[in-house]
Image (cartoon, rainbow, N blue to C red; front, side):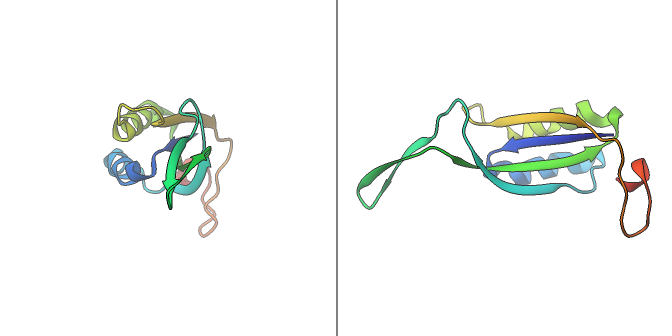
Length: 112
């Protein structure tokens, strides 16, 4: 099993979820986060004053999939989250040693 963590622009969340659903992904975790990378923040105007915002709002998606599905899921996320502009995000993949579904006690592959 692998955990895919993707940091994307917030308005692309529904597109990514819709891209993962046909692959058989039954659930994912979403967290609102802030960060910066190469785009180095942005300048905004509020009540006539200019402010530099260093940390931009992003969404972190975490999903656990079987190892055989990692490439498909990564491609689906990358395609759905892509705008072609700086700040589209990143995808990370981690090994998952164990998983337990609390309600039923199912483990590992059966738990996802």
